[in-house]
Length: 156
Image (cartoon, helix red, strand yellow):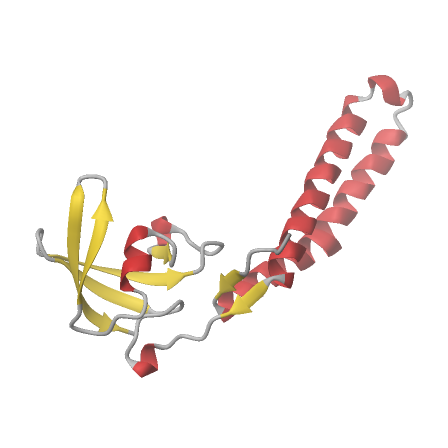
């Protein structure tokens, strides 16, 4: 089965690589040390510290595999804002036409999305609608309560 390509900004890839490095070189060693200490407590069949450490080890190893997979299938997307088009990596100022409210988002791959930090996925309804458009374009976004219209005011 073909793996899904993971679209990332350069910064997003660097963040995943740093997280992977931390898991492999810090967290993995910490958990191994916890297991070693727990083994010293004796009977493993009733040793909750050992069980907790082994569970944490399984979780860390799972995270490592997941991050390695994402990095292996990563495609770094260069920001096309200099070409006047919205792309992954672009920061876009939008006008919600009906509400006359401006908002600014950075478009990122789904792995990097964090709406609380105004980083929306290229796969989100707004992100998907504005990708490829240029300043001045009005885009329509299908939403549960109807169609929303946004005007692209600026692309950085």
